[in-house]
Amino acid sequence: MDLSVPEVALSELAAAYFQAVITWGLAAMCALLYRRYRKPHFVAWAAAWSVYALRMGAIISFMHTEASAWLFWHQVLTGWTALALLWAALVFWKQAAWSPWMTSLALFPLVWSYVAIYRLDTFFWAAVPAVAFLSLATAATAWAFLRYHRETGSVAAKWVAVAVALWAVHHLDYPFLRARGVWNPWGYYLDVAFELALGVGILFLVLEDLDEGLGALSALSAELQPRDRSDDLPDALMDRALTLRSVRGSALFLDALVPGAGVPAVAASGECAHWVAESPPPRVREVLARVVETGAPQVGAAGSARAANNGGPREPTYLAALPVIQAGEVAGSLVVVGEARDPFTALDTRFLVALGQQVGAALENATLNRRLEARTSELERLQTRMVHRHEEERERISRELHDETAQILAAVNLRLGLLAEQGPSEVAEGLDEVRSLVGGTIRSIRGVTRNLRPVALDDLGLLPALRALARDLAGTSGAMTIEFETPPRLPDPSADIELALYRAVQEALANAVRHGGARSARIGLRYDDEGIHLTVDDDGGGVPEDFHIEGNSRHSGLAGIRERVTALGGRVHVARRPEGGTRVAVWVPWTIES
Image (cartoon, rainbow, N blue to C red; front, top):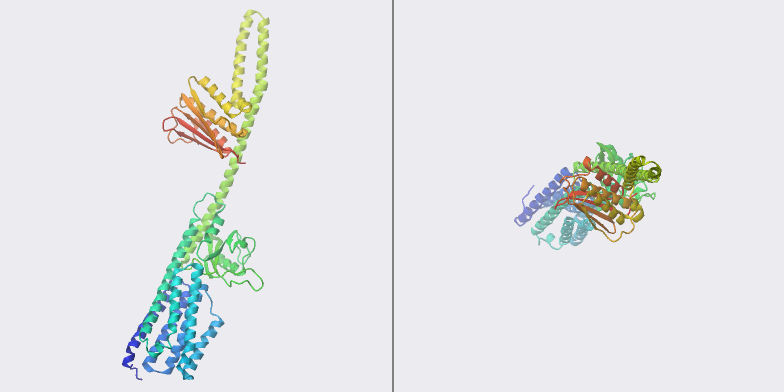
């Protein structure tokens, strides 16, 4: 067989060999990408480039032999290459399976190539249908990538769509230029340029997928960090999933996740929001069952986007189900669905398993936090109840001392006075001493009753009661001066708030004299829409820099004030003043938390 090539065709043959090498390189690249990421669209691309390389082998063989059989297979493989690239685009975009209509289309190049080469004598009519088929299939490939770009905003997909669209236009020049030798060998090099553009686009798509996958991990992991409220973690996780590219819905399944059972989601958003009230579609339940059985993520196509024939729930096109791991066991699944590929497509399984472990740990911590918050709320309610019971007991004792004991002693004192008047003088002197002791006891009891329950607070209100307290303390402590910085009146705080503020001032002033040796103090009181602010400043020795109310036995009274104020939903802060002395700051809200 003579394999020599005419001198004029050598440049064309060199270009064909060059294009064949480039094409095989693209096929190898896609095969390596499949080996690395195990995604079906890489297999489709590798198959498409392999068919294209076989097409180049056919045209090279034709140039060597000029046998019509090689021209026939060149034409067939050209059409099959266009279909293979279209199928690869559909697998990438929608993970479409090979269908009967693709098989029907694949028959056209086979049939028409036979007719064109062996039955038709007119070149124009032989070439135009084949070129139209080639250009339309290539344009459909560009359309698939353009649709993907519109759905996801992928810049790489837009690049591929433009390159393939220009390639489709380039195919149209075949019957007018390349078949007549006008473009040779530059038509081959232009095809190589389009191939390389598509290869670069494929690599850009991989990088986009990696970036999107890592972004998805970062976005979801951000919701797993410590937060102020633990009860909204599932909903926040679902809402954050909706911000990922191409995600249309998300759902979280936990607890009784039985394979094949129709278990509603504990949280869902977007297109999956109704899964909270009803069972997910059958295909989704199958995927959830596989997650439980294998403990591995399930990422890929979920089924048809149309509703089931029996009127069942709508099946999502894409679905990614990640196992939620707690204590080393699959406790549920995090599901995201979309219409254009899942956001985890380029990530390794170990990344997805790690994310599932993070979700499980965060949900477990959220459960513990909810229990802790419930226990804390219960303790706060008990503390509030104890404070109220304590105050009720103080009021009862104060009333008994004032109404019974003090009255009885007053009657005894009166009777002793009568006896002193009627008895001899030596007896009267002794009775006067007893009366003096009884009077002192009565005064002590009245002082105790004021401390147990300040009568002025009930009779006059908070501001007058505080001024009376300051006068009493100034009188008993000697030269201590107390200043006030208060509004003319307060907008009727509740009795509990008045009592808490009164006790806070009482304890702060007592500590200033007892522990700090203060000679002056200032009481500040102001209010706003949220609550009342109280400050008590003194010029005493001050508390240590690292002072804490909790666990300080010398200042157990301040701990009692903290319990009383906290029971009302308020705050207490005790600190050393920069200029010396101590500041006690109290804030109490208008609305007392039940």
